[in-house]
Image (cartoon, rainbow, N blue to C red; front, side, top):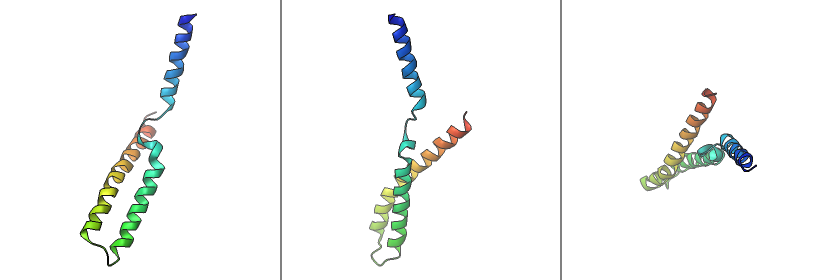
Length: 84
């Protein structure tokens, strides 16, 4: 009796781990929206007279990590498609 409940529990936990996707893809929409918003703001501000190198550096500090996250999501999804 006891071994059958342990086996059922192990099977259920392995089924859950096979279904859930770890990592960045669950936040993909937020990352893409944030990246598009920051890139758009950078374009608008670069045309204004208040643009300077400090503002450029500030935008780059926010855009670069989002870009790397976006690339990781793209790679993860391509691998998920290629790998059956």
